[in-house]
Every structure is written in C-alpha cells, then in structure tokens.
Image 1 (cartoon, rainbow, N blue to C red):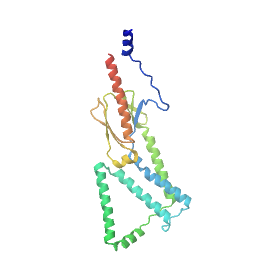
Image 2 (cartoon, rainbow, N blue to C red):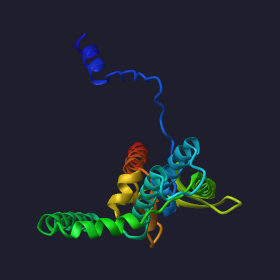
Image 3 (cartoon, one colour):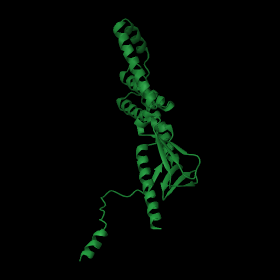
Image 4 (spheres, rainbow, N blue to C red):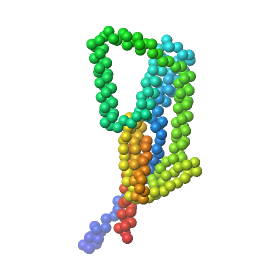
Length: 252
C-alpha cells in the first residue's frame, strides 16, 4: 500500500494547459529594416489634413491675405523641417538632452530680451508679418499623393529584403527572385541599440545586432520598427530553441 502511494507521488501527472482563445504560438519572427523615409509620416498626415481643410474650405487660390491657408502652410513647413531634422541627424540620449537644454535656453533668452528691450518687439513683429508662406489645396493634394506613393514603394520593397527567425534558422530573404541565405539560430546572440531618441518616439525604432555563431561579422539591422517587441520575441524564441536542444542532449 505504501509502495503504491510512493510511486504515485514520485511520478506526478502533467497538468493540462488551457489554451486561451485568440492566443497562438508564434513560430517565426520577421525583421524588416526600413529606410528612414518611414519617419516622415507626420508630414504626410499634416499634408492630408491641409488638403482636406483647404479643399472643403474653398481655398483653391493662393492669397497671402487669407489667414487659414497661411496658418496651415506655416504649420506644415514647421512639421516638415522638424521631420527632416530628425532624419538628417541622429540624437542619442546625451545629444537629445543637450538639444532640449539649448532650445530651452534660447527660449528663455528671447523671453528675457522681450522683458528688458520691449522696443525690439515691434521691429521683430514687422519682419515676421512680411514672411507669409501660403499654399492652396492643390499643393497639399500633390504632396500627400507623392508621399503616399513613396510609402507604397517602401512597403513593397520591404517584401524583397527581410530577415526571418524560424525553425532553428535565421533566414535572409532578398532579391526579386527571393534569394535565400541561411544561418544557424542556436547560440545566436542579439543586441539592441536605441541610436536615435526621436525615431524611437515616432515608431519605436532602433537597431538590432545579430551575432550568428558561424559568422565572423555581425549582422546590423537598422530602423527596425517597435524594436523592443521584436527583441522580446527573438529572446523568447531563442530561449525555446536552447531549451529544446538541452532536452535532446539530456535524453541521449
């Protein structure tokens, strides 16, 4: 009687795992390096807004005396300049803090100048009043259409150059004829870098550095969108691969 109880306790039965609806085991992870143009979507959104407002508002001609077209054009140019500034330069954490400090200092200096030298404000205001960029609805429609086509081209080209972690292998799909290069996934190391704070704020983008065990050179993938999520997916899948390998070796 005691022997039977000991045997039953030493071999516990596995508990059934309940699968929740909507959850499925992910069997592959896709890594797509995008060009920096993907970060231009704030400019595209502003162009679409400008086209809609000016078209339905009836602003079909260019008239600097109209307030609405001037305001929308000025806002569009400001967003465009900020967007291009982010793309042209990289802003690591230290550089971003320095930039915020410099902008804050300049704003404070201008405010103090306005308090101490109020006579300068009328001259500055007159200069600003003469700068009145204005565009009509056709301009914004053309900008939005051109950028939309560029985005379509970017996402189509991404289908011909991407990386995939699947079935214990790291696969590189590239070329019009879907050329394929294979790397072994076991012992693959993954590093994540956030080399631009503003790009990370826009699309969670960053850099992934892959270190295959059979390659001397590392594989650097820039502009991976939502890089934190991709890193967690890679870590989870690589952890599963290591566990499976360990189980197989223990059975031998």
